[in-house]
Length: 115
Image: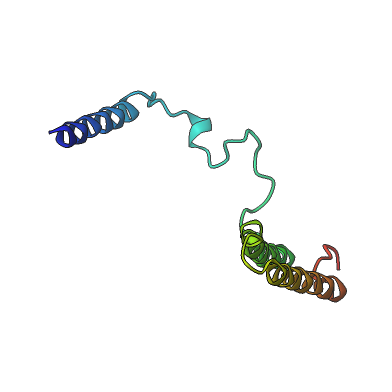
């Protein structure tokens, strides 16, 4: 009985909030609201200009290094294992690989913004 009443109550609240969200806002669009740019500035050029490949390269490098850093997150809990020196060696290996990858990217010019 309690589960059914909670289900009915949550459905009523959900339906009530959906009805309010549709009827509460004012539906009076003006020229500014209908424009594609709502920041207040007129567009200066074409919005279809291609991005530099450097932006994508930096984004991929960020994701790569960010995901590799996530490998170090369980390290504080792994220190409590039977052999904490093994955990320390694995964490040191990950940090060494990250440092080597960063040095390689830096030497290849992957982090330079201007060519």
